[in-house]
Image 1: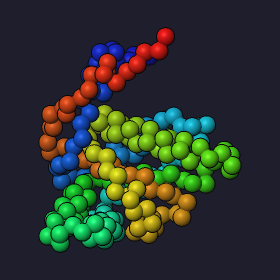
Image 2 (image 1 turned 180 degrees about the vertical axis):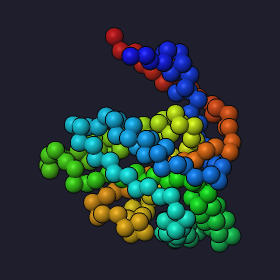
Image 3 (image 1 turned 30 degrees about the vertical axis):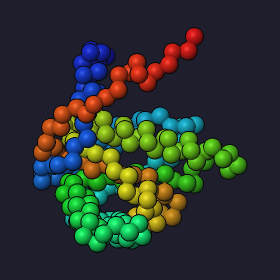
Image 4 (image 1 turned 90 degrees about the horizontal axis):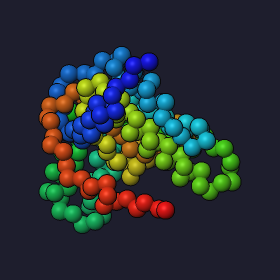
Length: 202
């Protein structure tokens, strides 16, 4: 079986960027479905595969989620004493970002998927598993020429997200990916050298 040369694969992985501006064209069904088909090959703790995906493509679905998330955002900012003008600006910016994304994938953890009902660490392992599948989605999307950005808003408004999208009660929203064909080519952000963050144990 032919594989990419290691240097080519490393170059591909290093070109992933957080893209926040997209072309208006939709992501074809066969593309996002292929992305998710690849995503579920991600590893998970005990191979429990606790991830669940909510795919939003229509303006109506994105508007419902935007309404729910920005209403929660508005309440939280008001409780923090943020000035009304700043709240309005942040709410509008958040709504626009969500609505402008051609494809939104909400990442959820199914809380009923457990190996042991008494192990307190199972929930943490499941959250890690959902994070891993999120990166797998992102890289598979990158392979399709899509750009994307990870957004954590649903984590702060889980009940609101479930209600807006009609998700099962056991689905715990963890975050979402905005995906689409990129309108921008962001420069690579500063990175710490691997030596700065690595301790070799002998």
